[in-house]
Amino acid sequence: MSFLALDNIKKSFGQTQVVKDFNMSIEKGEFVSFLGPSGCGKTTVLRMIAGFESPSDGTISINGKNQNRLKTNQRNIGMVFQAYALFPNMTVFDNVAFGLKVAGKPKEEIETRVKEMLALIRLDHLADRYPYQMSGGQQQRVALARALAPKPQVLLLDEPLSALDAKIRVSLREEIRQIQRQLGITTVFVTHDQEEALSISDRIVVMNAGRAEQIGTPSEIYNRPNTRFVASFVGTLNIIEATVVDPSANTVKVGDNTVRLREPVGALKVGDKISIALRPEAGSLSESAKGDTAIVGNVISSHFLGSVIRTKMDVGGNQISFDMFNAPDAVLPQPGEVLTLRFSSGDFLIVRD
Ligand SMILES: Nc1ncnc2c1ncn2[C@@H]1O[C@H](COP(=O)(O)OP(=O)(O)O)[C@@H](O)[C@H]1O
Ligand SMILES: [Mg+2]
Image (cartoon, rainbow, N blue to C red; front, side, top):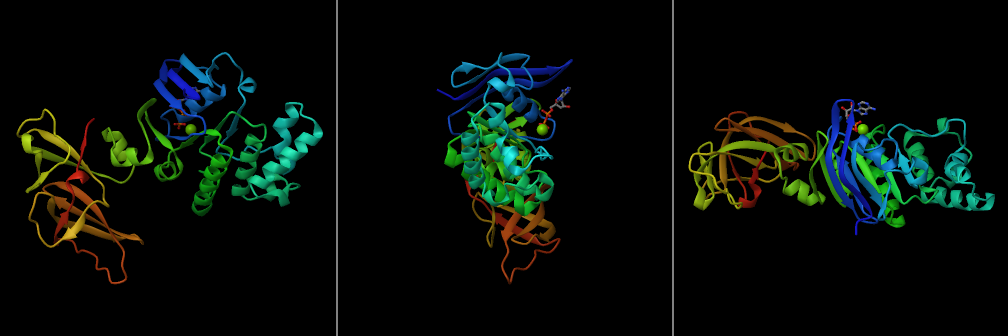
């Protein structure tokens, strides 16, 4: 049985429905990310789980118990927000102790638990500091400790890293994941950053306009996107228009190239249009255009991005970007150059709307 279940959740503000029939089952100890563009309803779903908003329809249950009528403080949920929401006039110790004090825990128990939490986030030496005396990353670790101190049954994190700079963001996301695993706490992590979601989640919910568009492991979401939206939002992707050549052989035409797809084209007929997604990292340069997985194109531009060289080429009106790893003697393809890229048939993903 799932631990946190959202069934047919809807939410309207006035006339506008911002969450539309949202369904999700999260297992105990699972780390699930809600990934989607700004305004798609991520925070609203999180706030409903926490009890800051009530759903217009549907049920939220935790450990088999319906939460709809419970107030926030009856749900035993820990939450961390984007902005450092620490109490500015309290020390680190008192911030972490806050929830335990409110719950009326005895002094010794509070002391022990706060020390345990500060050790967990490796800030035991800064217990007497005030928030303004700490970096953004340290403040977010304190916010995490404060959320975890009362042993919540669910941890909710709403873009907790987006105010931090790139390096800290990466190290802190790994630390959050490691602490989450260590405690085995069921966690929902909201982000608009696909790399962040891909790197730390057990499963990802890709959200679009108030709906869960696809739910899957990072590898499923990245390698087998179900819809055009998921394909283009998760990863840098080429979406190219092809024409069906022979439905029984799964062959399609891209520019002047006939390529064979592994996935069946389904009920399409000769001459029908079909959208194909191709990851930029999928192809590799080839000397020969023979076979049914090669694509020949004209280079439009090429950019050195550090670890990779990204080249854009024109293939019969489609633009295809592809990446090559950097090497000390790498030569950038020149505009106008004709190049052949070779793929494997499984690299061509059929995109459905
Ligand atoms: N209290 C509210 N009243 C009216 N509209 C709201 C309220 N909260 C959120 N919205 C709207 O709901 C939509 C989803 O918002 P939100 O859940 O914050 O998105 P996200 O977190 O994915 O960026 C947005 O269009 C936002 O303007
Ligand atoms: Mg939000």
